[in-house]
Length: 351
Image (cartoon, one colour):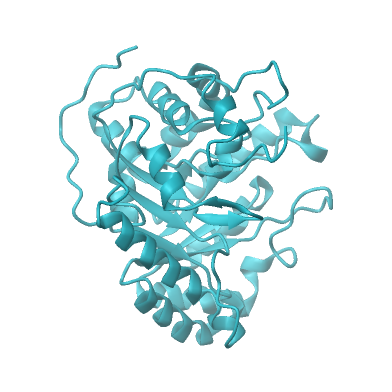
């Protein structure tokens, strides 16, 4: 299937549409706490493409853009090149608020990127990013995935990156400016993040992607070990009240785009993800957990409609208060999303 992950109505979109479901609880307000916008190769996933996903039935009232090295400046000082991403997102937000795409509230809050090893020199970069974002910048993301196995993707330049003095000085700047730290790392690194949370109690630390338990590669035959270590480290991390968790972005290879196979439905996704998501909610509490789409990455395997149906199935037994937190409240607080009102009543799930 040529260019199978093209989001412009081609073969991949047709494949996703092979599984369509009624939207569960269509009136439930949702803040999508983590998505990207980009052009990868010649394939765009920009406001038009995201708006089409938002219009598939779920009640998305706002979204949080997560940095993805998109539209960086191509000239000027290297440290300031990520400011280009903030300029780009400010334009997207203005387009969204214009109503022209039928998807208001996109990029209401923004997570950017800065080289934390700059230490104190990160401050002028962050100030430029805040200005360029139109005041939407809420924090930065450190993608620091690293594992001893070279078979796994390494986003950090080396092991132990978060403990380096220069990086800690950069994190101190975030705390001083009232900005948060998103962090994407692998489950064996969770204790490193706990050390950051302990060292900076005034900093909001936002763990991405359910703590990213590694379920493939060299860990494929060690699932019980992975789960035990992941759970123990998550429980230790939860002892720090300044940490919140994004739920989602777990391995999703339930199907393939090989002809004759179907993408997963929400029941399959919920069954696969529940053993990881429910312990997070139990350990951190709903007021410190929020659902994320991680689109368009997870659009490689499932539709936006199916993804949010799966989250609603996982949270079906939660109280009304907890559901409001999981789908909107926690994201509103963690990212200081303004102008969003979450109603008190709950709809019953309807098939």
